[in-house]
Image (cartoon, rainbow, N blue to C red; front, side, top):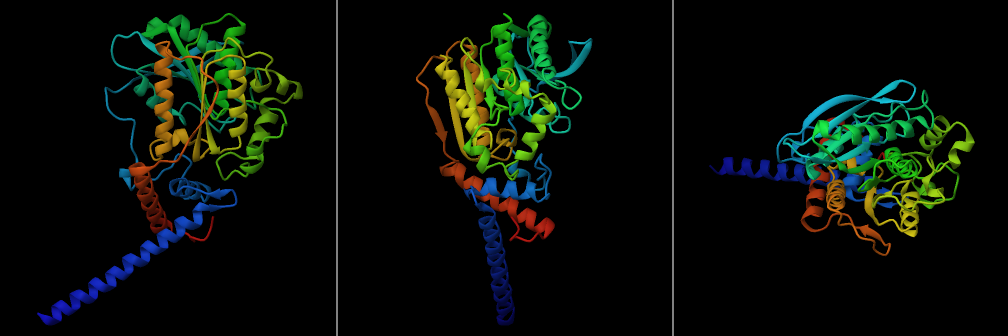
Length: 391
């Protein structure tokens, strides 16, 4: 029995050393990935950025084996999903996808405009399916994801006109899909955030539908070359959006330089934003579009539009779409959903403008984020054997 106990103790000791060594390697890898020229990143943000930028997973974060990491919007009855086509100018038509709660309604209506730099191959209805589904479930609204036409085949103002045509169609046909034509909002991310607010402007200018709200996730608000600190610091592409892509989008979507001064491409420079619906503007700390989004929120407030603006620290461009694995993304969706519900009830009031800064997850949420970051790192290292010193 003594020899068996001796062998067991030896194996236990060696096993403990191996576990400790593995933990040290994982911790070292995470620490290295967190360290950037722009400052120290939260562990979860660092691991995701490392994985995507080193092509270890796709941009839709295909980290499937540790499935406990992925949390859906969950709960409630499944949504009814329907594909339709909306007529637009030039005798064309565009696809839309409707996500509708079960029941008789009428339900509030939200037009959602996907991001993707206005260009083919960078974003579409499919790439934004998760965020639109979650908004529909959380707000109990009919959310219509709009497949507007993209550059280079279609330049400005095609995407804007398509977006507005979808709004008019939704207003006219709301009752056909249990929607409430008196409660319509617009929302979008990045390029789609631009289209959402521009659609609201066009509706105001053309005496179109009155909107209850506009929700803008890290919106692009100017095509002009102006000095913005966030564009200088975070334009490398490591944070999911590069200066190269921004220039390409500008050249393809607005090939004529005069287009870039149009308020329907650069709403930040519009003469008058008054009369627009209440706005929620969410920005990300590590995002080249951060400053122009926050300047736009300030300009809306200056023109007496009720505005709620929040900067989320420790996250990158596109973080809302990663809500299934990032707590900050879930926070952002919760904030957007609460804002939309309040707007639907007419409860948004004019308040003095103030940019709210939301800190990275704290307490138990922070502990969980840390644990999940280490689990993802272990999975990535185990699956690829990648050099941990590569950023």
